[in-house]
Image (cartoon, rainbow, N blue to C red):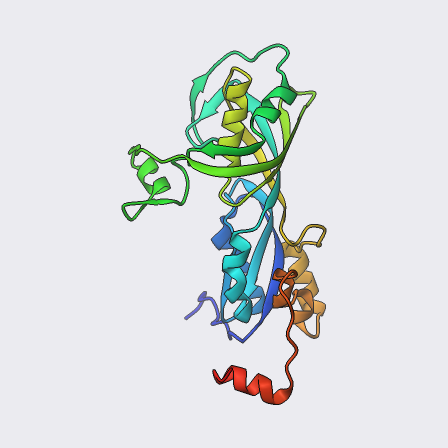
Length: 262
């Protein structure tokens, strides 16, 4: 049939890819593109990023999917740009403006950051993937339904804020799992006596991958065209568990473990 996409010859691929997710793609769309580039039979990602967000999205191929749950619990660092004076339905630039307020002439950024550092409680936003009675919150929000959400404790290890020449606020956030940076931006604006929403969001790293280079989809395409062994672009599965003790096995012990004989 003309115009049909050719079938992909999936293969076994094991390892971790640190993808620099581009603007405009959902995490799943980025995952599927990377999976097709590697022709990986099995793949998963750890910690969704909104389409508005860019940055580190760890993708697990094959055996590495077994460590996805551990990466979901990791600390993360984000950089965000907060626009004061208007609040949107989604907490970011994708939603319609639902409230406006004046912006203080000299907002005390340091005081607001100090108030929101440490253990804080957050109410998850309606535009999130959390489920209530089996329904995703974002699906309910799109249907015009607002439901009560319980506040959850998260930890903001560090929060730094600086003013930009255009009046926006740059935020750098080191936080625990479960933190919604969109909500943190709204809370930060509230501490300043106004409202706000994010106009940019980037995840710099996910622990334990601070300082590790990331691959864009474009750089992957170019590298895979040259690489004799595509797996050279991946980190080994054990890179996700650097603090776990290692146990070296001889061939007989490895065989026993693989067959469930401890």
